[in-house]
Every structure is written in structure tokens, then in C-alpha cells.
Amino acid sequence: MKLAIAARSETNVTRSNNEDNLYCAGITLTPENCNEPFVLDTDTTTPCLIAVFDGMGGMANGEYASLAATQSLSEHADIIKSEVEESANAVAVQKYVAETNQLLCRAMREKASQFGTTLALAVVTEETILSYNLGDSRIYALFEEDLKQISVDHTLAAQKVKLGVLTPEQALTDKSRHRLSLHLGVFEDEFSVMAEELPSLPRASVRRLLLCTDGMTDGLKDTDIEEVLRKAQTVSDAATQLIELALIKGRDNVTCIVLEALEPEDDKEMPINPLPETRQPADQIPADRIPTYMDNEAGRDGPLIRRVYIDHYGVDGSKGTVSEESGKPPNSQDPQDSQDSHNPMGNRLPTYMDESS
Image (cartoon, rainbow, N blue to C red; front, side, top):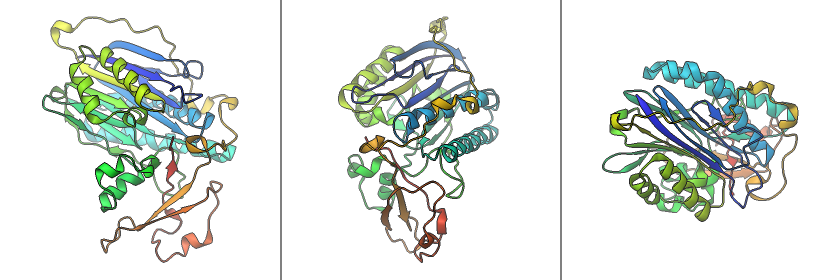
């Protein structure tokens, strides 16, 4: 079955570089073109693999993290696409996640820096859509009746909503919505990283599929996204309109992929844009592309803050508390971490990466 795909990525005027990346029809952003407006309109066939990434850690740190994760996905793409049965596909994706996380951890130790990236990934087969995510990059499915967010936000704000500390409406503007509880780039002594395995969808029931970074969802409401996806004549129109609106209303870089199945009468060849394809192994990225510093500017480009969420799933039903510590070197440990009576996990508490803009 043929699919129509439109991918866009653009740097917001408030940013000096683009820390987002994507994988679409075998094409990724490269160090040479990542800071230029990216436009891809093409047709492809099932099975199809698409993904978006949003790097964190400040400037070149985030750019490296998303680039490394994207190039690693290029190496795993064939096996992920070949495993169309749900459980086998999940095994292939989790292997990619584990190996990519190890790759980032090695780079962080070597360079004494800390960085990471989100992930939103979908595999579209003739019958099914299989999807996964880490962090706050999202996956939406447009159905005949409504638009649904398929992905799960791995943020401190989302956990506060689950605990009843915040309402869903309050979480939309709470500062903790940018503090990630799960992402690629977590040291093994914290916890084992696994992608969220989302419910599979019947491909025929989904009119259009959207993958996007939080630069889009920070500026646009779900109702805005649904209106564009429903009214746009083509996926190319939808992607362009979404990017333009997000750049006007938001402050972050924006990346999105919009996909739909082609009806038989629309089943025509569309030449792929002549954009360069990245095939460089992730572990062979030139050393000068790996950051050796952590920016000190405030906000998203500033130093990482270690944010520990204590007893967030307490057996007594309590809402839990939040404590914050200044950022530490990746391998440092506070002796009290393993002695705190309120910390049953010892030094394996998650690190919340702050990606606030």
C-alpha cells in the first residue's frame, strides 16, 4: 500500500540552531542542513518507519543527541520495518532504544557533558500502526470523529496530573511540563530506559497520522491541530500550515511528519525531494560534532538540573513531594541518596531533564 508523507523542520527565530531531527523515508537532517528549513514531500510503501527527535542539553549538546539517535535509527531501520508482528516489532524497537541510550551515555562520560533526546516513532504496515515514544514529542491520530493523542507525555507535569496535584488544564502552562521523566540519555545506574509501547491502531481507521516535537504543541492547541489536519487537502498542505502556525504562536524549533494512506485513484508516483541522505554510523560522528561543554545561559540552553520526584507512586496514596538539587557530574552521588528513608529506590531515582524554553 502506498502512503503520502510530508515532513517539515524549521528553526524558530528565537533559536540559534535546530536541536530537532527526524527520520522519514530513509532521510534525516544532517549537520550541514539541520539549521535550514527542511521540506520533504514524497510517496512510499508499507511497511514505513517514521520518527521525530528533540535534543536537549543546550546548543550543540542537543543537536548531537538528536543526530546520534537518528543515525542509530538508520542502522536499525531494516530490522524494525521487517518485524511487522506487534511483539516482534516491540523487541526490535526496544533493542534500538537500549543501544542508542548506551551510545549517548558513553559520549556523555567521555565529554563530561549531559544531554539527551526525546523520541516519537511509528511503524505503519498495511494493516496496523505500531507506535512508541519517550519524552514529550507526540503522536496524534486523526479519525473520522475526532483527533486523539496516542503518545504519553513523560513529564513531571503529567505525573502531577496523575497524582491529582494539577488538573490537565493547569498542566498546559505549568513550568514542569518541560521537565522530562523519560528520554534517551539516562545513565544505567538511574534506571533502565524503555520506550512506551502504545496501543496498536487499525491502519484503515486512521485518516492522518502526525508526529511532532513540542515546538508545535507548545504553540498550538489540539483543536488547532485537528482543524488543520481535517481541512488541509494534502499532507503537504497540512504540514506546511502546522509549521507556519507553530512558528507564529510558539518560541521553539518545530518538526513534524504527516502521513496518510493513498486511495487507489490517488496512487500516483511522487518523486522524492533530492535531499542528502545521512548514513554515517552514529558511533563515527566526527569528534568536533560532539559537545565538550554545557552552556550556562538560562532556560533550555542552560545547565541541567537534577530533579528528583519522591514517592510519586506511594502505596499509601499520598501525592508525593518534589525536591530539586543542583546539577552534578554524571557519575557523582550524594551519600544521602542511598540513605533517605523516603527514597526506597536508593540512588536509582530518575533524573528529570529540564528542556524548558
